[in-house]
Image (cartoon, rainbow over all chains, first blue to last red):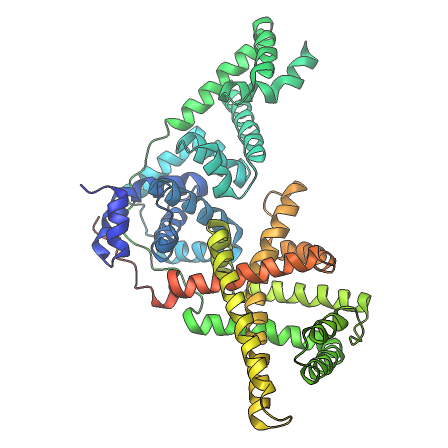
Amino acid sequence: MPDDATLVEQCLQGDATAFDALVARYRDRVFSLAFRMLGEASAAEDAMQEAFLRAYTRLPLYDPAQPFATWLLCLTARVCLNARRDRATEQRYLEQAAKAAPPMPTLEERLYEREQRRTVQRLLMRLPAPQRAAMLLYYYEELPIAEVARALNAPEGTVKTWLYRGRESLRRWLEEELG
Amino acid sequence: MRHDCERLEPALHEWLEGWLDESARAEVEAHLRACPACHAKLGAWRAVGRALRELPCLPAPAARLPEPAREPRGVLRLALALCLPTALLTVAFRASIQPAAAGVVAAARRRADAYAPVHCARRNAVEPLAGGDFQLDDLVGLFLLGLALTAVGLVDVALFRGLTADYLTLFRQSPRSAGTRGAIVLIVAGVLAFVLGAAAQNYPEESPARNGLLLLIALFVLLLGLAFLIGYGATAWSVGERVLQAFGVAEPHPGWCILTASLLIPSVVWIPVFGWALGLYWLATTVGAVVYRLLEGGLPAAAPEPPSQQGN
């Protein structure tokens, strides 16, 4: 199985199947991160789509010195933050969901709902978006603090403060919930 | 002790992450040895970190949602991005631009007449900067500049947020590359303008060839100005966002970012030497970003459709 750098190189040389391989490799991680940030499967799917689209069109700007996964996940985090900002997009999600709502939830949706009911995910959604993004990139994706700061366009000190506040809020809420 | 706990709590978190230096670490460790409450909090924080790390990776759904609606792309988008801000700026500046332009033309004419001895050219180049030929009132000009830049930025973000975000990404990812290319383009443009100007001197005044060459120089300068405008939206967004974030606004709306930056940027660019250098830097990075995009990044329209994610 070729590594990420090789696949990126092939993709830049015009081999479209190389990008398919990258998508196959990272789609679950990208989707998971988007779901953790947005808290809704359809919005996360849209964000995943947008993240891969941007990754593809901006591949010539990718710096090979940085791991591809880090670049892609940072890009996903930015897409998710922008998706939240964009009220029109949110409205579109609602309209699409209303149009596409099936009479009975599918197995996948039931699984997502069960996942969403999990306490940590629910409490994560109560955090302000930048704090949530910082927590997920640092703890969930285990990216270095410098990469998190770059992804969120914030100084490292601010990211550290977000991490502290986010962790303390989660601790407090968890203790309230679990007694 | 409780006062100490509150004071040390942020440091306690930094200690847990291993971000503290030697002296701060010793203070936190001394406190931890004597404070069971902070010890317990540390354990709870560890549990929170573990819970986040152990969140399962979810399988992405196989079905694919319809692609999100896209903004107009490629050449059309670039052309719109160039024309709209320019039109706005022209309307807002009309009263100020005309006398200023008249001053520049007068200075250029004198310079052309006195061409050959270098010191004459230098004297004439400095004169308009000193205000001799400009009729632009400083305060009114500053107000109009702020107003126009705000309008340009707002329209840019409202209509071309994707394009602006692209440039923003380019600035952040490779400002050095953009700056280098911009500097090269500016130097080439300068040399070319000088050569064209020198060539124009060989023709008699008011001759069609001379007027054509002068028009070419004017177009050249206009193009550089337009490139500067494209980058304004991205720069103002970035500057405003940073300023507002520094004041504790976590997710400032792009409109507020532009407004904030438009209050700051004209004030800075107005400062002699430093402000001009900053303006020149913007011009270089913006022109460089355009060149980078055209030559290396490729226009968005040229990029093929991404491969399907289905069936993976």
